[in-house]
Image 1 (tube, rainbow, N blue to C red):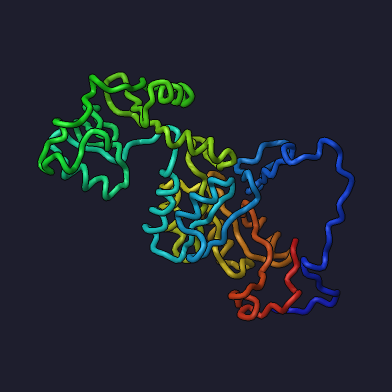
Image 2: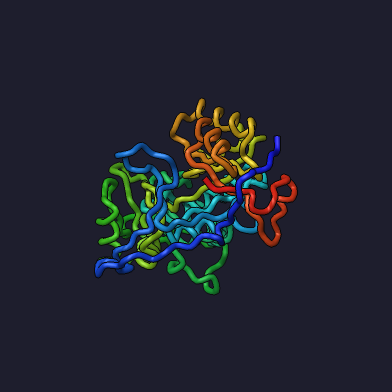
Length: 335
């Protein structure tokens, strides 16, 4: 039931931060903007933090895969918009996670019987120019050779030319054994002037690749936000309707954190969604809820199992949530 606050209301613009004393140690190089994203116990390390306190709105016009990649490069988290089919959203998450990594499972692979035409078609589909030739055409098959853009010239080869005529065969490849550390792999890449280093198991199967571009990316973006496998951290929105299908698909795609996307979160529907996730995933899946505007709404979602709560139902030049939900100007209060 709606009600009026009897005390005066305030907006953020009515408050001013008064600067205090700055010592000689107070310089930008000594400042960290590392920010916890989810709840954690006092004395323990937060399981998910940002290097800069910035997230993007769960909106179609804001948070697609490019925002996911761009914001992770700067140390923040984008939440891929939910107003799309489940498979499409999961694929966006997957592309952000696969954009870079330490050890990358190959997703551009060829068989011995393939031709230059197959190479060009695969490059068109995947956008990748480094392709493994394996006995079964998978990213974990026995490695037989490697094809890169340096191995062929389209103007001088017939499209029907078999890959065996221009690939670099296994016996001429520079590779590293499975178990090589990421630092050791990067050292080999730099010492041998490689763009990609195959990591090969003892029985000759391809385990993964390490790419020079991923090392260069990290040097150029030292605050980039990475998971334990050196992939970009990315979030995704969910709703209170198809979460039973959407959540498993996003988790399978590798999403790092979820948030229930709603104009007003103080509802039984969000509590049901949180309960469903906790019953099936425990605390392994991090999920936020909201938005709410007072302490009562915050406590409701926190008690329901939210890992973080979004505060504030604000107005904007194109936002009509306050008008639609009946929230008057200045009545939304932060917790």
